[in-house]
Image (cartoon, rainbow, N blue to C red; front, side, top):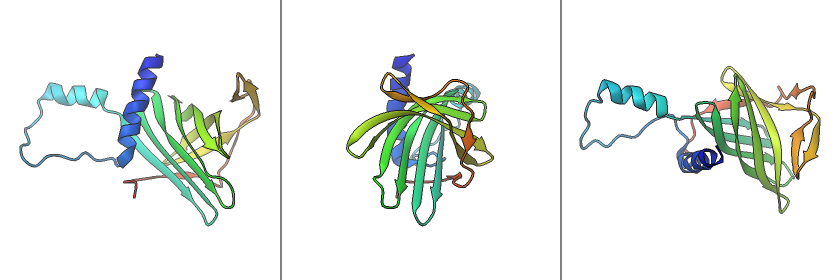
Amino acid sequence: MKKSILFFAAIATITFSSCKNETKKDDSEVMAPEETDIMESDVNSPEIACYRYVSKKVTVLLQMEKMNDEVAGTLSYSYFEKDKNDGTFEGKMVGDTLLADYTFGSEGSVSVRELMFVKKGNKLVEGFGEMEEVSGEMKFKKNTKYSFNDTMPLEEINWDGN
């Protein structure tokens, strides 16, 4: 499973250079796909999504690629007069909830923390709960009560990196 996650993360990294929900086609020669090709490509095609929250003092950008229930992506938090925090995450979608480990750099060090986002329509809302350190990583405590930051919903966008 670890190998598949690493492979998935590598593909996600390449894909995120242009986060759009469209496929470019070479105009030189286009052939109609056979029915079996369509079925196979639909099953194996990852879903790419980008979400963003912007205010005068905060910008949050999340880009993710979902293959079945596995998810990988990048996440960036930029708060006014604070160090920017950029990183990658790997995890799973459980229903409408993204649960992942976020590896990020901030203030000159690398940290790992568990994160949660709930999908509400075309938005992601971040969930928070009591955390504890487990093997050098911050994890949600078992049986914690979660709260959700509805004041900073990330809206789905088409983004080309510019």
